[in-house]
Length: 136
Image 1 (cartoon, rainbow, N blue to C red):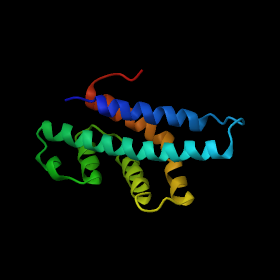
Image 2: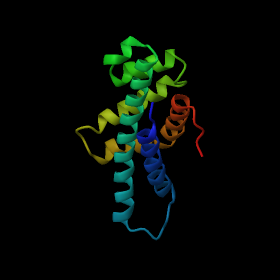
Image 3: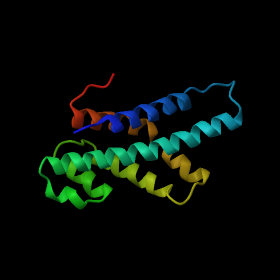
């Protein structure tokens, strides 16, 4: 199974997470807001690629129920299969993602921004579990 798209999504997310964490006083308000907006979008995309990669992997490993599962059911199945350790974290990420689907308010963005650092660690762990590669 090819995990290039998954890895690229995480790398792009990582770039924006680092820019977000770099509290550079030289940035204008507009630049800081643009970084936050981009981080939210990259979180959304990375989460989509993550659960869909997990779904494909589980299906290829013989888990028939993965063929038509929702994001939450796929993550629960991955937890049962030992691929995901902290299922409750992933459910939190999915809920944060779903909250931004149709509402782009600052309040909803703040919900995503509150989980991005935890998500980064968990998405890297998932990538490593699925691909067998180390993250460097």
